[in-house]
Image 1 (cartoon, rainbow, N blue to C red):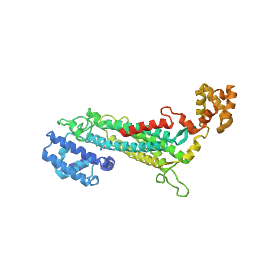
Image 2 (spheres, rainbow, N blue to C red):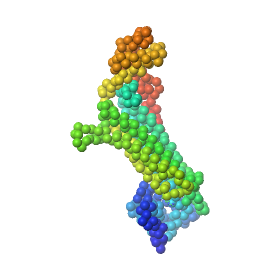
Image 3 (cartoon, rainbow, N blue to C red):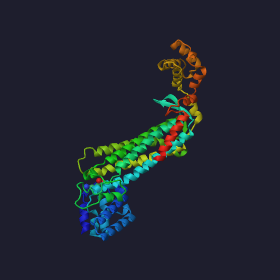
Length: 455
Ligand code: ARG
């Protein structure tokens, strides 16, 4: 009987479980039903399958969909199990569904179909995170904070400037995901095993029914290539890496009391009753490791595979699915943590001038008054060496006499120096395009809002 033939096809003996991807294929169960429907509609329109049979197959597919993935018969994968379930309902004519195709083009189509939806969810998550950062930039435009290089106090900036620095990077992550989407969005269906088919298939029609932008030109490429998975997973790994930096910043800032992570995004200790830890952000940071591992796993799986289809490809999808789930979730959590964080203005204002972070601004003020920048740098460095964090007009004056052999007042008045030494004034003075001055940040917010709305 048919049943016996089919059961023999999925043999595998003791390796049956090893061969089967049925459980993991739940991810593409709905995609496979969509692909089956499109294929059957096209076969009927092309006169390859008669209308009555096509109708019975479509009815069987609806029934299989209602029953769900769990109700599928055993099989090597979801494609075979659904075909078996169709034949169980329709009889031998159900086997016409697999005319002019192979599981090779079928699975490649299913993965692309499902991945499109997942990429769009990841894009949504980046938009949420960007929205939260733009809101933070709006409300913290005047909140000065220390800016760091080498994690040492460097120059004062604002929380808004910091937030937009991540928003801009995340905007490029959105772009990368959308680029990956564009190249994922082509249909392999009708490539058959890799070598085409003698049947008069209409590949454009199935591509259209499944919402693809077009078909893949070459049948061997269509079933073999998984570069769309590499590109998508790489975009996710890049996104996760960006988020890990943001998470790390918030962990450090929470440690310094600059920011308080909302209780909903914090955790406590099982022994130390006073503890409130930014655990969610630590886990966001760690998801970058998972994503990088996924990309590495995928590249290593694909490396050196010969043309055309090889069963290794069955292990490729998992890396991408885990990356997309893990990174999308991390992005949503990061967005929530940012949206609910409380920035501590007073602590930030005190910290903004620590470590003589206004030194560059003082050197800039001297240079603007005509002292060569390198000389100005030396004057300020020698004042810093003498007075540490307590540099003021007097210590600078002494340094100028030593270094320049001249009085500071030949160049600048006391007021100019005192203003340069003030973190708030220092920030306000750096109003070049892209800078932290509130007016410069206002322009960056306009750009960010426009891009956010367009994406
Ligand atoms: N389940 C397989 C995959 O995910 C598709 C089956 C193709 N099998 C084959 N022996 N050609 O890649």
